[in-house]
Length: 460
Image 1 (spheres, rainbow, N blue to C red):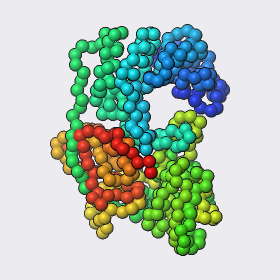
Image 2 (image 1 turned 180 degrees about the vertical axis):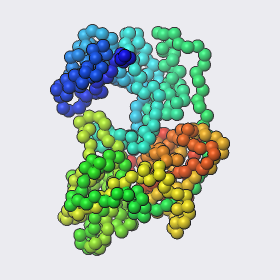
Image 3 (image 1 turned 90 degrees about the vertical axis):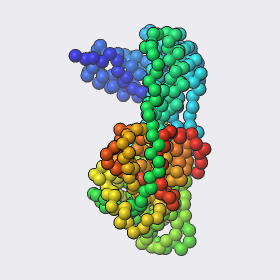
Image 4 (image 1 turned 120 degrees about the vertical axis):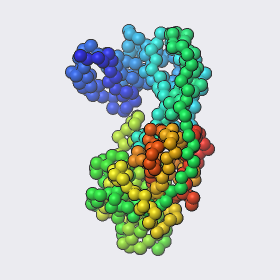
C-alpha cells in the first residue's frame, strides 16, 4: 500500500537557467510511474514570473517560497496565476537565513517572522517553515552560493531558526507558538528545556606531520598521472582534498608569479615547494602569488573543495584545478595527482596517539599539517562546542566523525557543534585536526558550553 499523500518533484528549478520542460515532463512521468495517480505531485519556486514559468508544469501543483521581506498578498496572487484552484502554499517560509564565510551572522527579526506567519495563516494558507530547527553541515556538506562571486557556506546551519543548531528552544519559537495558538489548539504545558551543555576545557594537541609526511597513509592508491591537471570529478574524488604535484621547469632566482589566469582554482590552493609552505590561491579572490626555487624542485598544490554551488546558474561546479596554471609565461604540465582519503584513514584508526608522541618536531608548522590529541572522559557525554582559538582554517574529526570546517580567521562562525552522542564516557576521545595555513604556538583547542556564531570577521 502506498502511504504517500504528496511528493515534491523539483525544488526551485525555475531559478536554473535551462528552463527545460522536457526535463520536467520526464520527472512527472517517472514519479507517476512509481507512485501512481493518487499522490499529489508538486513543485516549489520563488515567487517571480520567470521562476514560476520555468519551474512549473501542468499536472504538478505549483507552490511558492518566500520570507519576511515579501509582500504576502502579491506572492500568493502570483501562485494563483499559475495554480487557479487549490490551497495557498508557502513551501519554504524563511524563519532565518544561512551564513557564508566572511559575512556577518544572519539574523531575521522575530517580530517580522511572527507578523508574516500570522498574515499567511489569516489568509488560510499552508506554511512549511524553513528552517524550523537548525542543523549542522558536518563533513564536507556545507555547500556554496554564487551570485557575482563564489561564497562558501559555513559549517553551522543554525539559521537563526526557532530551534537552535543544538535543538534548543529560542524566543522565536515561543513567538511562533503564540501565533499558532490564535488558529489552532496546541498542547498545554511548558516547552521542553534546552539540553545540558558542558565546557570540557582546553585540550593540547601534538603535531603528527604535514600532508607530504603522511601522503602514503592518506593516499594509499598513489597518484594519477596526467599531462594537464584533472578535476576532482575526472578522478572520482567528489569531496575533500586532492594534492597536485609537479616540478619547477626552470630556476626562479627572482619572485615569479604563479598564476591562475582563468580563475581555475576551485576552490582554494595551498602551495608548497619542497615541503615548505609558500602561500595560497583562492577562487575569485587570489589569482596570483610569487614563488622562487630551482629547476626540479617539487611544487605541491593542495586543493580544497570548499563546497559545491547548489543554487542558480552556476550549479555545474567542477572542483580542483579546472584550468591550467602558469609560472610566468610557462604553462605547468606533467602532473601527479593524489586523491586523498583522509576520512578513510581516520575512521581506520589513524593517527595512532603514539605517532604524534614520537614525532621529533613538536612545534606547530605553517601549511597543511595534521595534529592530534585526546579529550579525557569525565563521566559526561553532553553537547559541547569546539573553539580553535588562533587557528586559521581547517577540518576537525572527533572519534572518527568529521565535524566540519573551521575558519575563525574569516568568521563569523567561531565554534563547531559537538553532539554529546559522539563522546565516550569510558575511553579517550580522539581529536584530529587538519590545519591548512598554520597552527598557533600553543596548539590548544577549547571545548565550551555555548556557541559563538557571530564574531567580527576578517575579509582577507
